[in-house]
Amino acid sequence: MAEEKSMKELQREVDQYIGQFKEGYFSPLAMLARMTEELGELAREVNHHFGEKPKKNSEDEKAIEEEMGDMLFVLICLANSLNIDLTEAHDGVMHKFNTRDKDRWTKIAEGEDQS
Image (tube, rainbow, N blue to C red; front, side):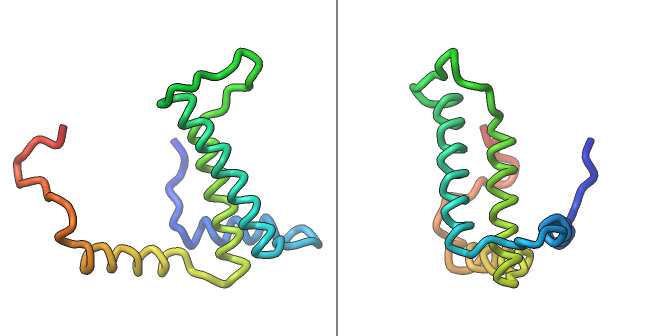
């Protein structure tokens, strides 16, 4: 089982990886284009697994997990290049969901089965 890492550790790990190359981070627009490409690949995998479009025999098998990993890497690169702390960004989003959207969805009653 892989070691658990905090978001700060993930951001630091990606920064150390990118920091070994002269080119450094791509521009924000280039990374957004790359993230869009990765999202398309993730969408294709989800569609193959859960949608009505089976893979062609000639197509390589890629895991949804791998595509999500690619998305996460590019997101971290973009955040690092813009000096955005993703832990803080996440905390802000969760605060918004827990305040503004707290009554938007039907909550599961205590002891109620989720399935």
